[in-house]
Length: 429
Ligand SMILES: *Cc1c(COP(=O)(O)O)cnc(C)c1O
Ligand SMILES: [Zn+2]
View 1: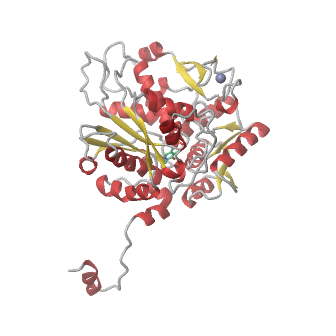
View 2: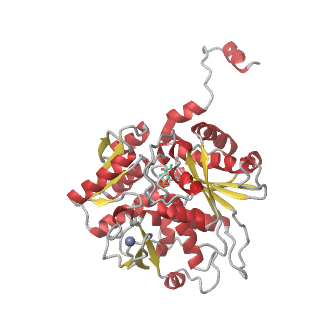
View 3: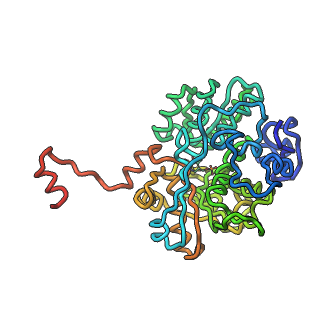
């Protein structure tokens, strides 16, 4: 049993019981992404919210890491959580980044600290549990790299088999993760979008459980847990009369490829509102790479994302390279409904943000993770974010995922002969 009441199509609003459909709205094919709905009064009781505001939403008695929020997750009580510890990542206040950006406060949520080093672990943890509930022997996914690494790692921890479709051009570290974890790895000669379609076809043909982003309705549910942690770590502004300290977050920056993290973050905020814990949502700021700016363009030009054709995506930030963002309906709603904005940053700005973020707070991000900081700088420059802003940056992936990009961005090391004289000369003493 879980507290899920149904699945609702983001296009037509049709409702389904979880046992009626596995992935998408039958009336809308792959575009019919489903939103998971819950019985909030029952969850409220399970969390003891009626008895007064608890110190935190998380309960260690429910589970570890993200599973401390288990009543808000779409899995049966009896399904065991995976071995690896997912979520429970640190949040750092970063005054030097705030000063550099010209805003009041900056917090950095380091989700590169997850077991396979990206936020995707939050989704893949649910994927292995849902596959077990479905009795599937094999789990499959298409991915730019991180979702696959996360699935391979989580499945290795539970002994489940995986077949992975990634673009042949994925960074070597991510491919290495897949191979080490024992996944069957298919390097697709094509883009992420090609890999996505091929994976769907194969999962239907072979009866594999499909984790594909936005196609599988439960992935956003895993990703939303990052917001519950932010809530507990920051005490987001609660409705009046609460005894919680008020620390209001004004903006949350998230890098965007398919839009599933952005949509998941928005879902987490809606859950908090549904539970009566949040009066006002922070503005969600979706950061896109200039070479993969489908959603930015659609938002700027008021285009219908169900009619807008795919683009050719090219960016150094491989994790946010998506020609047809699969969760585009949810992503657009997240920006619109929170009074947020999409921000576009160049590859040069993304690369420059890697050392700037690392030197400003000690967190080493892969390009798509550092893009959140590049987006903040851009939004301040554009006047979208003012000096009074209190900002959280979601760092979605660790810098060791893509060492080549980091080396491109950082200055060169000095090579010296092994003598003190050489050291003196090198440091200019
Ligand atoms: C997947 C990913 C993103 C983007 O998430 P979407 O749901 O595709 O928008 C951003 N950063 C990293 C590190 C990722 O792995
Ligand atoms: Zn529908």
